[in-house]
Length: 261
Image (tube, rainbow, N blue to C red; front, side, top):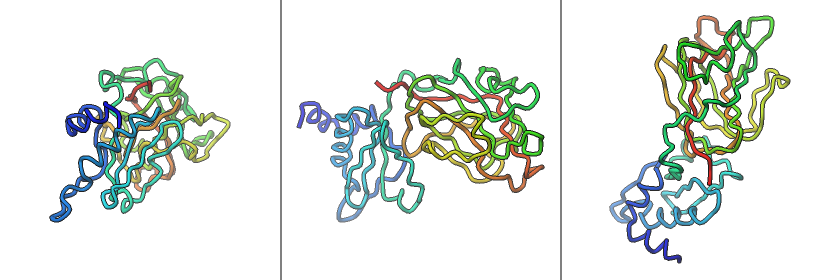
């Protein structure tokens, strides 16, 4: 074991709190077994991750103490969406560049959308001005946008931790996914449901946003690394004013994360 690992084990909880954040799962307490998983098991898993280049997230099985590490360039830690499976693990993610937390990485990046309604250009979604808006054409226009999308090109790989969304239209975000990865979408792809990039966040249902109220979502259980961040409607709205008229209308979209070292 390295001197770093020995030093870390002596400081268990402070190290975890300083460099890693628990993103999903619950620490359990058993009358006979005690803390599950034990602090030492979590710490050893984190130390293992810290020694692997590109590792940014770990999970520990509450029942077996098994440690899984996830490499940002290879693994999709968010592919498991079954709640009963997720409940068996406690997830911890690398805090990354703590000084950069909360900085909007979308400013100055290239943004495109599946179609454009009137003057509501895609660039309005990331211009740092909530008075302007982007909007795709709806599904009932001549240029159908049954599964509309908006994509931000981050120029280089970033570890994406979360996204802030703001809209003036409560019907504009329903049944959507935010994905992060290196698969680029373009208008030639038309109305496909894009599934190549891992899911950062998904929502099934209507009225995700309240009018003019920002909402931050996190990539869970782990942050994701990639060059492209995409938001896409994946199903028709069931109780919108016009159920078949799908569109994305954003006053502002902010992206949080850091450049991996």
